[in-house]
Amino acid sequence: MRDIYSVAVFCGSRPGANPAFAAAAQELGFGLAAAGIRLVYGGGKNGLMGILADASLVAGGTVLGVIPDFLTKWEVAHDGLTELAITDSMHSRKRRMAEEADAFITLPGGVGTLDETIEILSWRQLRLHDKPIYVCDVAGSAGPFVTAVEEMIAQGFADPEVRALFTLVDGVPALLDHLGRELHRSVVAASRF
Image (cartoon, rainbow, N blue to C red; front, side):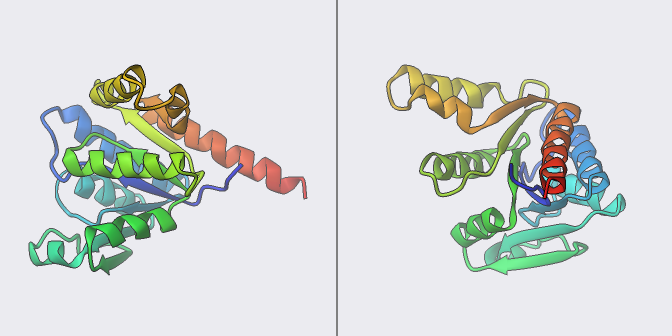
């Protein structure tokens, strides 16, 4: 079992239409800080990204933002983080986030969030990593993603084992419970030595 000290969260740079999305981002930020887990995210100040980072910071958490240089020129970078890493491209941003994380979480978001989730899932399928991936369903937001995965399987483009590459979790409390169990297993395993 892997130790979880740092979690990469993929989520929207907009707040979305449902207030439950912002509430979930805030709850996750508070929860990660309370658990002593560093947040790694895309470095933005807007939308769910900003809400998540602000909540973690307010609760005393450590936050690493990873943002490509061209987005800092659009004035979307969060300027109050523990650390802000500036990369030369979107590709290097995703690579850095993956290197810095012990696990991955997807909250609601748009095309960028979907891109990050699919890529990290693909990397796990290709055995480039074996870190946990959690897709957090907030107010039904994960339904289209799960439907797409099921359709890939049904059409013969993916094996049923793809379902095991990620864990679908219903809401932030259940997600934090999953992370807590992972942390507990790590502590128990370490105490055996």
